[in-house]
Image (tube, rainbow, N blue to C red; front, side):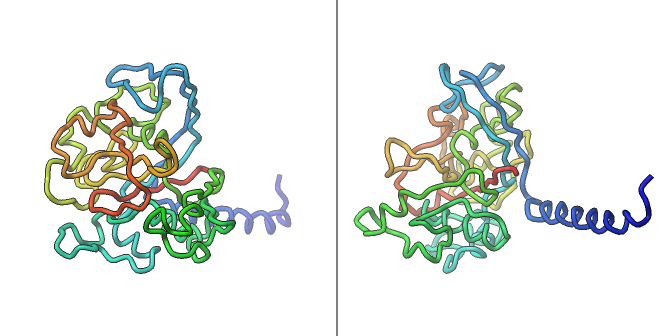
Length: 285
């Protein structure tokens, strides 16, 4: 039996523990837990199993992580990135707090992730020139001729930190396929064999987030609407893989998870245009 005097010490501890859990829940209220797994060789399941990330002869371990259920919105991006306006080109459509952020390059996403991590009391993942504070990083380079280009390109990522970061390409594909050790039926797209159910595509304008059905994990817009930066390089340091396909694509095959690079292509780090935005993840504690 617990004595009354001991309860005096236990009750405040339980209260604090409960508050910590509530705080974590509040911070990650729009995030979906993705249970990791070790995948040995190619995907062994029914459906569309051809994969750029999980192939014969390789073993891939995905750690547990949280993925945001939606693409980072313009409102969210503006909150943690000084000077970002909802749209750079006023002649373009798709402006508003619930539209995905775009016209952001890969360097912009690093700033956003660390700024948000710092603001929310999480440990930043990215380090540039020995600092995790974007205020110390200087201006974002516009091309490889900038003196600071190599500093930004050689960014280090602490995957053990609990801050916000871009997903790796394999994390993105794993989540898009529904996680679960890749043991369930593999849809052609992220959550369906019918592209219209899960993707904004074949249109001239970006859509607000979450207008289509989510995949099996409850994650929206993994196909279509905008493409999403990942952290992985493609053939060297100058290009980054991005994922998902965007609203203007008119060919369904461009979105298929079984195609080369899982709907990903390579683009230069400094590129900004209306087709690319971001989605963030957190490594699970």
